[in-house]
Image 1 (cartoon, rainbow over the protein chains, first blue to last red):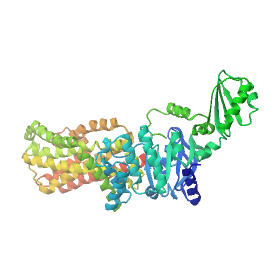
Image 2: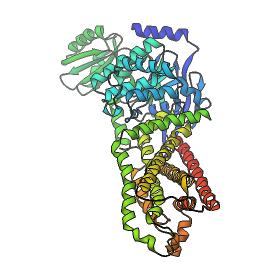
Image 3: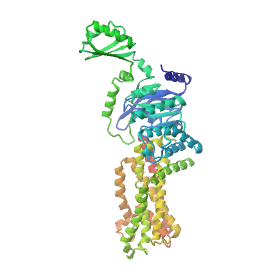
Image 4: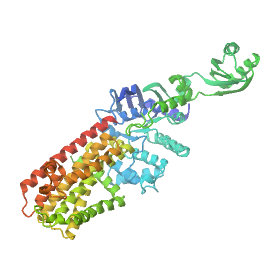
Length: 351
Length: 258
């Protein structure tokens, strides 16, 4: 377990009863029978970074819209910072910061003006507001561009401004809906550093949605995998991977193998299980990939099976996704891209 | 209530700043009425000589017409801004802030009313410089200003409503182009109602643009008929409140569709 994850675990223990976000059985159906959420539930402990991972169209954005009071669920309930999102919407809006998928900054206003207006609406005034705005502009490396119209900003600058706007009133819970979608690799990794810093330094609870496995793995201390409007698995990235029981061992055979024959050969190797063969690809699970590899190679050699290559890897979130959603993540993305209409209504965005 | 006022002020300031940063648009907004004033003023100069026209000079008659037409033509585009803000996600961002809902949608109407007031002021001044006379004096001019602002409120709120319902630029563009000339010419903007065909007079009686003009002309005359001013102006005020309420309701519906 990494130090960061252990810290998160500690934070969870001390705030065991404080839940920053609680979503219970959320259902949301859009016109034309699009069931965006189908009984989605999860809880987020205070001070953690929680990731909602899923392909486009899985219901991540709809969840964020409901939790941030923008949309209403058909049924189910949700509380953010201990406040009911429906009954106490106004109070929720003061407790949260929201960075939506689409920027939302006014392109005809300067960066500073956008920031000041958000702050004013959140109740900050005068010198306090000016100081907080300057602090955020400096922190997000926007001080030099503060007086320029947002229209002239690059994608990365605009995203940083969005986050700054979400933080102006020191919210208790920050929502980041696909914070790095559409960013170039450099801006993306800068944004990752910033998000990691936010969660470490300020005790802020962050809910992050993403369709990047790597992003979820790197930033989130707890994850929920969302598939077709439901949570199909949740836990820390490490826990989720550990539940797959071991490492993945991939063997590339020289010739397509006979599954029954290979099974007989490999039954003598206690370190591996769940052997499956498809053409020249043999995959298996092992508690410890490093010790399983030599044993596996020896058994195959004895059985007269020629091998081209072998790799052992820690399970990735993609393996986790495959296990719980029944398909590879990239496949899910592709089918989402194919089935969703090319241009949703202006308000629709990605659901 | 004070919170609504404060929120509306911030949201209006934001839009005014954006407007001020588009000098080309500002200049066109000011120049267009000037063109109308001098184009129609020269073209129809002889109309005032017709019997039954009832005004000493056509320019005197034209100034209120151009003021109200300008109010109409600029305010009908208001929905474009609303639509753009929905598309850009700006609207959704405001909706997750602790901001009064009506302030979000009404700010564009307030901004339209302010720009119309300034525009009207400029047109009246230019008319004066060109030799127009306003027998009703300052009070008559204030009535003209008020009714032009009300016309702006009615049509910007209407445009916002249509923008939120149709969610298409083309609808707003089409409707603005379609409505501007009929609404203007089916009123006393350029021609005395007494000289209109009967059916046009009937239609004009139902045209809010005409209500504004009738109220303004009555107030600007040498012997104002205040009953007429309040009847026509009152009708316009009721309509302005109703359309604004409708746009707020449509806005609620928009929130539900998010």
